[in-house]
Image (cartoon, one colour):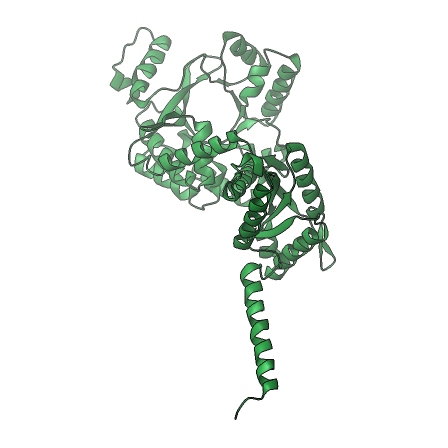
Length: 465
């Protein structure tokens, strides 16, 4: 049957509408209706070219990350997560200033481009406005859901006047804010780019460090405060990379944690340290640091068992040191694993005690064997009497709970004497000895043995047998 002219017109209208719908869907996010990442880039590029032709080189980009979206979707369902994202997108549209462009860049990431912005102060003010608007709680079934945000900000004039650099710089600033645990905003600067370049270099080096033997352990002696006798060692990871040289633990450990690699390195450190300590005199203890991330993998207890069985080391000589921050996230799961390790016969030490977290309630929830007084108190004791008073209070608390206490970071005899007077049980720091290699352990142990028993001269093999 032949189509009438009217039918042809209707069909043409439907095709035009369908093409328009396809074009709209290809350029916009289906959930929020905002521009998608590709279209956002195109629009900014068009504005940049127009501004360049008019001899204008200004504009600011604010990228915002919404924290906790997986938790919202996981506990309340995907519909709740979608509702929150849609509500935040609606707020961006409602609060938009003339000429600005908004987009959904990723699952939980939004961006707003503001034209005619040339100063840091103006850009940061706009970022504050966005954060203030988006951070208001979202009502979901009469339940307010709190919104936590971080933002990265970049200026077109400081991005080589290139759209791709503008977006990359804002994302680097955003990641910097998130790495700091910040709920605020960070303005891009060249140091951030250098920092992330270095971080990527360290990450690349970590990926092959075990196979290249670029990761090793050092052992720092711990001494009995009263007798001066050697009591044990703390194992500390070190990285000596062919391309980067020595890399500080303060630098490579956070990178390993954020990359999900610390569990592998932690298991390796446990095995290496236990294998070394199995040949020490049986009264010497071994302390190994445990990263909070090692509890998340679910393999920590198995890693400890494997290290003990394979090395043949007595469990009561192994001390596992955890930081106070470990107990703040999923504490029930952490305590369950700690109890399993404690049941193996190992000791649990609460490291960096007094660094600002409130962990007093955990001291009677779990049978810790020691507290380690944070080295910040040790350094501050030389400067202020109040620091010494706080240290004295911590020692008193430990004594009341029948816990031993170790002071680390000691750098002078004055500090050592003050801590002995306070009643600290064990002392550790560069004043006594820096961390040493496994090869240097034998002469160190022999030297300490000779101090206590000058009439006896065992061979190095006897001293560490």
